[in-house]
Image (cartoon, rainbow, N blue to C red; front, side, top):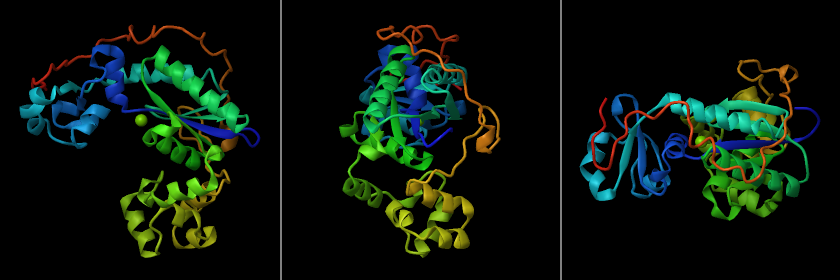
Length: 291
Ligand SMILES: [Mg+2]
């Protein structure tokens, strides 16, 4: 990313379930699970399904007997639909920054510039545009580094006070520390269970513990990769941007996308009504999905 700009991480909420709803708006507000290949278990839950206490990975045969009582809808996964929705989201986001890195099917980093207030407004504009034009809800985290943008996105998602958009620099320092102290290191981008155990053995339990660790000691005891995470938690960007669609890691290899005008405000959910392929495997309330 050129200069010392900021990073916005845009992430679709409950992606598979949201994509199903973009195709069939009658699913809005209903508990919905998307099932794994062969309809074995729940791989995505709508917020309403989470509120019912349904766990990720819960087998459908356990859920099916109570589906009618709960009003639970299940759908077979439809990766063509999800790929189509993803492409639409990314294409739309590309209109807001010349620097777009598609990180996963439902997440993208954007290089952005502006004051915290301007960037929060941009975050809300993107959130509204994606909802209106593609039909899926997103949250936006903005910060000086990718790692902090991921954290900001997580807080935007779980704290209604942020209204789906969190700019790290707009969060008071005391609250930043409180948020970091309340989050286990395993919640951090790139920190897996095994590494968490090793960190715990060094008395590093929370994100705040890691942020306060000596980066040189972290490099020596763990890895350069984890040292970068510590530096990023303290606002120093060191995770490079990747070339879109490749595994290139050099920041100098990042290719700016052409800047285009954002969509006209008020454009109806035109895309939401016309995915290229229908979603197979509709499963009405209480019915068991076919394989
Ligand atoms: Mg997501």
